[in-house]
Image (cartoon, rainbow, N blue to C red; front, top):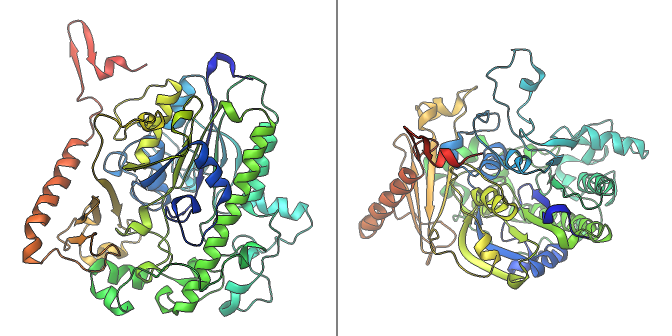
Length: 517
């Protein structure tokens, strides 16, 4: 039955740290994602979709606000989101939705106006203003742990140690079987909570759910059958320099990052040492588990799809499947995210929207960005927002290209330390200078650093793995200059325009400001 007022339901799903190449629907040679593929057959797949930044909090700020990092200014996990910014939940609430959260948003609240002892200021894992929280599941995973305990499973070790059996040797933990089953993962728990909530919704009343899964974010461990679904020998070759030392020597940032921010324990419970010390076979073991985690998430997506169908709501529901950022997964001897490589920023995006069947099963190869999600959703539901950096993807859902569209991807990465000051001390720079910006076309990628750190330039036609920096090659200096100017022009165009597009006149406010609700 159609919803009252003709408004669709909204399901926004984010899966943390999912690489954009790791879906079978985009041609991955190993990973199988039948339920994401099924969504793609009914929707549109955006094959060149990129995060706005990394890590989690900054990346989600771009997705939730439609603003680049240069404007929302969430630089690190823990950077507060300025309360003056509109966001996807507030905008949907203005048109009658009650946006409801399952999982987490990793948004640090604006501390201004709050007392020093306010519990909201104790953690960076706050909830985006505008969301009603149905099931909060931040990093400590306590709700899931208590759910396991109620099922008779010893979860007293807490997160993440509950993933590791007590008798597992740290060096063999990648082969360990978790103490819980495939039906008892955090993903399964959250999917079940969403479906339980779905069954409570009033017939004909449109709903908005944001399901935010942690997987395939580390710790990299997953139960049977997913832990043996893929062989370590399977998968493409890694993009990397000839050795770890050669990788470190390629840029000062990589030398610092590989030495100070790549600890094994961050990815595998109980492991010790540096990620770069893993052998090729060990990297492949971890990657096989990562692939298994993706398939585990995909299995729960299938459960959700079926639950919505059983509820009679599938045809009336907008479904957006994406990630906050991606995962290096062994490329350049790295795990996790950060820096400038595509492996950290190329993420999935599949959108199915009611009334847009003409484009079903199509794929878009134009460059799209996380900042496009908010304007797209508002365009689909008739909402309004102030000036955004993103553009609506609705024309692609209607099977035609917009008249004006970007011809390059853009993202940023801020690597300041702030509280500890360790990065600032290492580079001898202040926090404002520890950042980079990327502009990437089909053929060329240029990376500009603050603080005088050397730039990078890659010929993606002949070097898609980004291993040969051409920034100082005399033959490529004209290209370097061209892309530096393009990057500068892009940043100038997207400087905060909150009030610049308005004017106060005798008749009152005119321009963009006057049109806001």
